[in-house]
Length: 54
Image (cartoon, rainbow, N blue to C red):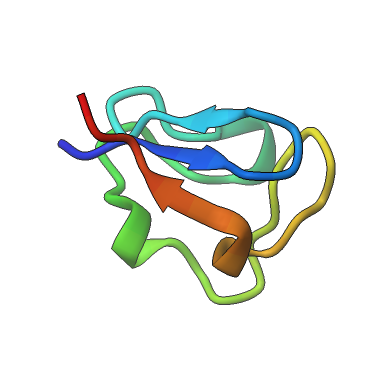
């Protein structure tokens, strides 16, 4: 699954881990995150995230 990095603080959203502190179960792709979801570190919106290119 694709990972996404916050361009503000560098937090990486890993769908295999999810964001359980904010109700996002592991296995949830970035594209399926709710529109109102924000970065758990800096509260940036989804638009501030970019796909991690390896």
